[in-house]
Amino acid sequence: MGELFALLCALFWAVAVIFFKRSGESVAPFALNLFRVGVSSVLLAVTCEVVGQPLSRAAPWRDVLILMGGGVLSIAVADTMFHKCLNMVGAAVTAIVDCLYSPLMILFAYLLLGETVDATDLLGMVLVVGGVLLAVGRPHADALSRARRARGMLWGVGAMTALTLGVIAVKPVLERQPVVWATTVRQLGALAVMLPVALASTQRRRLLGVFVPRADWRFTLSGTVAGSYLALMFWLAGLKYEQAGVAAILNQTSTVYVLILAALVLKEEFTRRTALAAVLALGGILLVTLA
Image 1: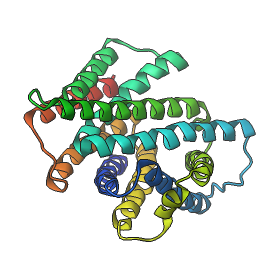
Image 2: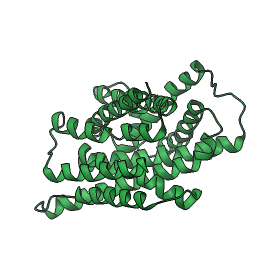
Image 3: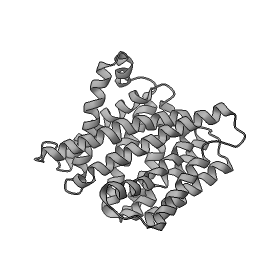
Image 4: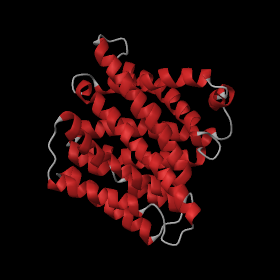
């Protein structure tokens, strides 16, 4: 069952990315992320009660603060940057940039947690970075297109960096606290920062207007449920019932799904260069994860 859960996680996340790309055509990155965090916080809070991990459970305040701080970094900051990247470069290229997650986890775990890195890890990192660089632009693309793609990918790299640091920060807490409860606290930490920012903004009417039912909810709400709730639940289930390395590899198949859906649904261009970039990035993921 663990393998099935991991594959479902990848599939639902890929579907969510397509919905988020369509949402980004009418919703600003911060507003879209605020909507995701608000709706998923409610869904996760209900799930906590259902699985017997109530938010009111006794826990050290230090753990709560670390989880909330990690949520600010890996959700409020990282996901807003992710949406900015998605809007600028499209779903296919964003999926390739997302492959940086595993190598960055290895790197920061080595730098901050003292975990070991071997030659296979380093080779995997090189392959992933090579795939990302290859995806920057076609050789004959105009300078403006390449510059926009490069800027968009920088947002993506920033998103993966913030996400990874946020996860590394909460890793010790996750090892001693219930996973669903800890995930919900992280989400609420992001909401506790994003909501006051929206209220204090001169554009608060536009930012908060995303919660008013409207036509683009068919993309925004669907993407939120698929990506910020169902994919997350299947990710946790995959980790619970399958070895972490196997689950991670199966989770990363979302890159393949996104590339296919981006071409079929969004009509994004799928070139040999994009395919090679994806192969390099996925090959690096396999090396890092199997190692």
